[in-house]
Length: 114
Image 1: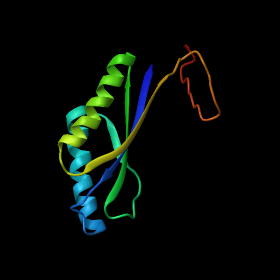
Image 2: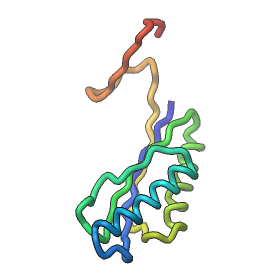
Image 3: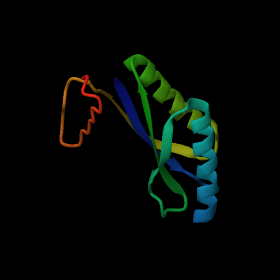
Image 4: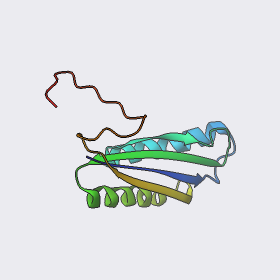
């Protein structure tokens, strides 16, 4: 399984209050979620009017497809013209069902067949 995660920092010049910012972000998040069927949410800069940090995750079986989809997500966010992408970060991880790595890994095998 391949997991791609990323975050985008966005400048929102049209936001003059937290309420306006949240409205703009709600549209951006909903449109992106509908377009790509991904997990996406505001993950930082919550109390700053003109900036936002949005995180997203993509899961699949092909690293190239995941990387391409993540690039398409960032491009889509830019093309919405609801804000300016000023920084983005992404990473891709391969997670094996046979490996148990790190203390943050949680796995439940309800039926004991793995």
